[in-house]
Length: 378
Ligand code: SF4
Image (cartoon, rainbow, N blue to C red; front, side, top):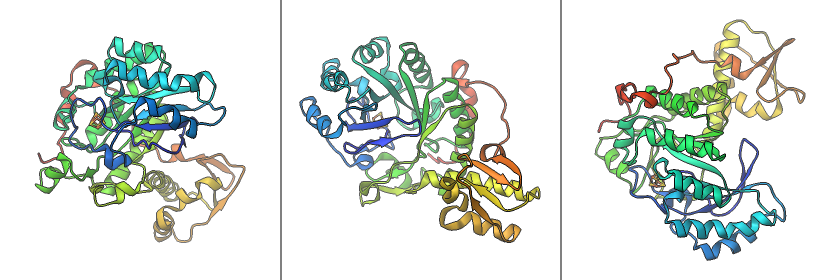
């Protein structure tokens, strides 16, 4: 469910520019219960391969190191001729050095040996797999049409082919709970991806999930729960050395419009809320232990430290009295100076270690099936 846009370009956390081309639902064998790409990216049709060169010519720099990205569908499930037509349309721009690679998003069950070899042969450099969950039950209830083992097989084939691997997870799907989210993350990290995207499930209009929500069969996570959960998942990913390049859906007029989000933990600054949550956790722990003041952070961290609408600052001042946050250019991002001591957000905000039981779906799926399903009634 990559929230690509057909226009514009972005630089993600691992420093690569992405030039998205949107192919909504192309290749998808069925519609997942939560998905409506038109609402996510505001596009309802895919460009024909013949239109791609003109779009890229307008989009790409004279020389560049980014990736052209086919987002919004199941690229490797398109017919082989159509995949090749799209990829051939990008090839001259690769040869001219205007872009360094091609990224596609796709389904785990569309990454068999032949499909992976085709991607590699035609210059694809990164594949984003929409795993969403590693619980067979959650995947079934969400209408995904594949199981957790498909993701494991796809990931190992993609890595063996030398492709960069991104995994997408969606906490809060039907039948899911926090335990499922933690375990799905553990499974995802066990596949050694190059990066992750975390999209807490929201209810989009004109989806089956909307119907279930209106019938009372599905309850999305409250926003604060989703923030807390994603903060923990972000922290655990960081501990594993895997960057999370996206937290929550990208804000867009379509999402905010009448045919966009009707319920669920959406916030246009979701990533900021998550990072602010971690800073509150860190500073609460520090000040509870008697950490002295003033506190100093990198300028780029000030907004997260203060929190959304100064929420962290107000919270800390209620608990500990006046709190002074200073800015120091020389500090590293996520660093914290407390008097003479140099501390770090990630250490201060630490979460309890959870047992290393590996990825259940590699061996038996039953451990993932024991969740209480606190977000789903149906
Ligand atoms: S496979 Fe991906 S793009 Fe296709 S319907 Fe499911 S979530 Fe949406």
